Every structure is written in structure tokens, then in C-alpha cells.
Length: 142
Length: 113
Image (tube, rainbow over all chains, first blue to last red; front, top):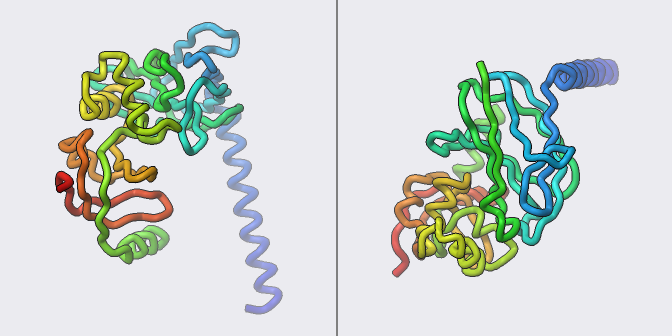
């Protein structure tokens, strides 16, 4: 490959990255932002400290921003809480909503389930003796 | 092309034998030993009274997956239905390992001798 061709190829690759970056930024702009605290007392909370209940539109883009605080125990890989979405009826998992949380704030770009109904978020890391109570409701509306 | 390359790579792994216990991700991945994690979960009563019922409960109701816990290593299993039959039991597994993801592609699973 000649020097000119390499420069050309680099320019194309950089342009592709730039376009992708703009698309991601646009997606974030339009996403429904959900903020949750996965707290040290093994409870999900809203940023104000109350028990959260999330309502999403079916299929909408979601930017989930979670702040995780370490409870009493955690996983060997450093995950301190989980955030896994289950269908309330049969407790089956929703694909792509099986998240492990590290200490601090992290963001996830997700798509709300296509099927309206009742869902439940559960923690999948044994974070304390109150781990089993770490859950919250999530509702998907048409 | 990438997918084909990955499949070809996975196919390169030769079948191996693994020994351990069929557990759930929640108990097996915790910083505690598997025995201690199960013991803590069993306090809640809802999980039943055995390691097998604990693993089954954590997978069925709490979002976990069945895994093989083997001498401090935890391997994910591609065939959850097969693993379910041996929940809480010590087993011998023949399968191929994806080293990076630590997923075992199950060929055969049997109770440990």
C-alpha cells in the first residue's frame, strides 16, 4: 500500500469513528435517563433516598446510571451488587439486562423490554444478609 | 468473519474433564467459600435445606445461573438445562473450555465417582 493510500484509509477510519461517536451522543440525548443508587444497606434507592419504581415505555432507549456502594460482602471479581431484570410472572431473565456493578457510578445503554407488563429488578451478588430483599419493581407500558 | 474466526478458535479447544460442584453464580462467585455462601443463604429458609435447593432457588427466582465450582475456580456452563439436573451435586464434566470467558461447552455431565 502506498503512503497516499494509507493516509486515505486512515481518513476513512477516523471519519467512521467520528460518525459513530455522533450517533452514540445523539442516542444518549434521546434516551430516558434512569438514576438509581444500589446502596450499602442492600437496597435500591432513588437519588433522593426513596424506594424507586421505574416506568418505561416498551422498546424505548434507556440510559441507566447506577451508583453502587459496597455492602458487607461482594464477588471475587469485584462486583458489589447486581442489577438483573426478571419478568415478574415467571422470573425469567430479560436479555441484556443482566448487569454487575462495581463501586462508584456507571452507565449502561439499554433498550426497554418490548413486552408491556410487570418486571422486577433483583441483585445477583450476595451483598449482605439482607441481599434477598434487594429488589424493586419496574413497569413497562405500551 | 469475526464470528467464524471465534467459532474456529473455540473449536480448537480439545475436550477436557472438570471436577467440581454444580452451584449458582450468587453463591459460587461470592468472596466467601461456596459452603459459607450456601450456609448464609440457607438461613433465609426460602432456599430450602440443601445446597442443591439453594442453587436451584437462586437460579429460578433470583436471577442466577448454574456454574461449576471447582477448587476455587468458577466456570460458566453453556447448557443450563443439563446443569439443573445436577444442582448441588459433585460432578464430572467433559467439555471444551473457552479460556477467556471461562465458559465450558458441555459434552457430558455425570455424578462424580
